[in-house]
Image (cartoon, rainbow, N blue to C red; front, side, top):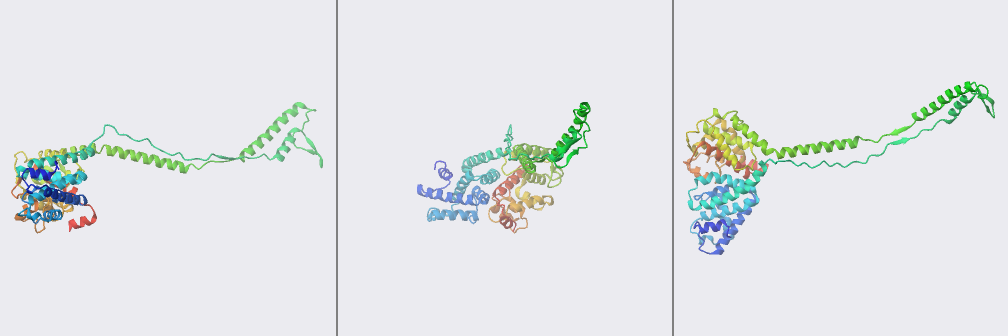
Length: 446
């Protein structure tokens, strides 16, 4: 309990439970229930955060109603302790729940930190500032660990050796041939002399060698050599011609080897691409910074009004970076905005004027489309994107409803750097809080 947000609110005199530990424990249990609700539905993180930031949160807001129900479930007699709706208690419970849920789900952390960076400069409750600063720093450090891992480029890339199971290949098979002996015998007789004796036919002419070795040995040797060599060569050639050698089918093993090599190369390229993604991303951002060209507006940022250009920059950067991005990315955006003409004089605008411009400026249609896709129409506390993405909604332009719906004073003023950072962080927070299922998308668009 020493590290409890609730206890810190109590010690700072921001909530009062009459000095009873059992009541503080009930608040803690209710906060854990809200953390459980966040884990089941991370999309609630944005609205939870925006109510937790605001000491003047409206009592009828859906998040306040949900938190009161959680408190009622754990502490049925809480109304006997508090004379009115305990907004400070609700905010402390929500902050405690957000911190707990962020430890298990980094999307909740992204949503909370992005929203906090926008809201904290407008928070006037000095007695809470230390609590908020500590919680934001802790969650932001946790989120940055994940972000830095996704943006880092390793000094070397380890690629596992290729593994391949050698197939069993059958040995070649040889079908032997035989010599036709009768014909070979006839030819050898022809080489041996002019005739031979057959028991049935008597002396039979060979039609071959016309000499006998005892009569003309020299001539006989010449003829025998010539005729016997031809007979042997013909017999050998005939036998060789009839030998059959059956080769094994290597098509399947080679196809498997080709597939294994292709898969290995593909996996290696993916490993290299993943390892160098951070470097590629940084290179693309540097190009974008130098070009000062908006892919959504299809023109140079210098050709646009400075506040419109700042809004486009926020959207264009959002489209280039992943959800988990280090805090330095928002600072990078600020440096890019400062390169625009018109930022050197430090002029600022009322935040409601900036929202109205985003609702009406023709070139900012892509921002309105992205906002409508990420955030539903205004209904209770929500981001400025809800008003920008749904400009025709009945509550989107009402001056009196502006602070109720956003928690931001309508007369708060932002310069272009702050405005770009605000939109970028709200886009990141809304993306972290959004559920990309088709049913949820239809519900947001409806």
